[in-house]
Image (tube, rainbow, N blue to C red):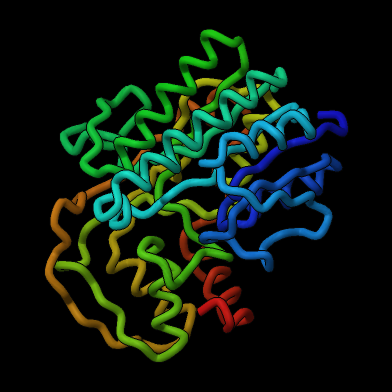
Amino acid sequence: MSRQTMIVTGGAGFIGSHIVDGLLKRGLRVVVIDDFSTGSQANLAQQAVLYQIDIRDRARVLEVFDQERPAAVFHLAAQASVVVSTREPGFDVQTNVLGTLHLLEAAARVGCRHFLFSSTGGAIYAPSAPLPCTEDSPVGPLSVYGLSKAAAESYIRYFERVHGMLATILRLSNVYGPRQNSQGEAGVVAIFCDRALTGGQILLDGDGEQTRDFVYVEDVAGAFLTACIEGITGTCNVSTGKETTVNRLYYAISEAVHTTPAVEHGPARPNDMRRSVLSSDRLQRAGSWKPQVAFDEGVARTVEWFRQHPGKL
């Protein structure tokens, strides 16, 4: 990529800020759109150009695109909580569907070459799908959040077909790592780190044997960058392909903090998936991306980051 303008929505957030860092390291001009509803100024590199706007504001989105005329858009801004989507479905749809539509409209209007979208791998596939889920597994979201992401994917495919822009949909498994919000309703690794480092009690839902596919945030950012640089399009899972129990996560954090946090077992969460794991074979075959950070190493790095940033706990 030559020095071109890249727009990152949600660029002050957990995953988006790591993508911003990667783009800047490659000498690109980076424009961030973020309303700071969940993102933080502290996550944002000073070299990035910032527009503090809400993607639900169509007029402002169109204005920014008309001015910046990006070569590519990395769309990370989202309402990302399953709990919030259930409580406020209208807000979820306005942000995740209508907001995405505003960005697509703006991108098509200025001739943007490539639209890259952060979708969900954990909340979009049908519970009955054989594991590991592939991109061809049946879609059957159980939450409003999963439904809104699936709808956004459909609009992206429509704009790809009608307007000819390259489109990449990356369905992410459970992302963890530095800069994740430990006070949110999502992000079990960050929440456990918070409890372990502050002497709090860790709550395990059910027996703790439910599994997730935990992928380190720098590997996820690398997947977006690889897809853009190498022109990878279509729908691809981003994951390690390995199941890890929540109990195993607890023990890895205990080892990283050199203590054994107190544990309370609560009831299993209703409609919570017992097992979740994705295959990222398609993405690995399409280009040079592979997950690099092993689970224990990623947890140790995450604990150390939270230890050095106590204000984030």
